[in-house]
Length: 261
Image (cartoon, rainbow, N blue to C red; front, side, top):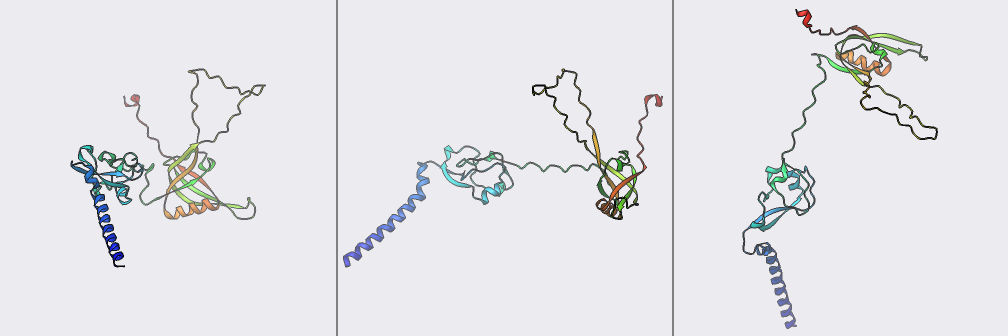
């Protein structure tokens, strides 16, 4: 019995020595791999890292691991520590697993695109309101930027469409833009021969000229005050709006050479 206890104690002691030896071996494995040379810590990707990933994401998500390598085998520019100076930088290309992280992999993010400049100048104290109108309701397309118009509203007052009334809701408003879009065109049928084969048109080089594209005026933007904007919105949703032309912008005419002489 006493002998068995002694054997168990010896076994426990040997197991403890073995555990210590394994830990020591693991801690010194990298140093032994250097074979007496100087070592440098580098960062290797633990998984594929897509381009445009920030340094902050790489560090917070632990996408790289530290590995001790012989200094003579580490290329110039290798990153040894991913500190906060890389937080706002982004990768300029994808990193493969176990690829070494280099300083050249990072770039400053491209500057934010400038906001597009407005297509019109809004008068002080006014707000812009737009309404989609047909050509007829735009005085047959004669309303242009700078025109002064009045706005009429036609509303149905009974069960039948003929029971309606028209009233002036905005006495005076300035047009600041007129939106245009290509007019819808129907595809012309493709001619076919008698046997069902498709006949392609013959085009002579140098004779074809592009036809001018027709544009449809479909939306008008007005500069009005808040009260008039509310009337226009309510009228647009409840009835039909019509513009009446009061005045048009005076075109600027450049003097001709004959006029100056």
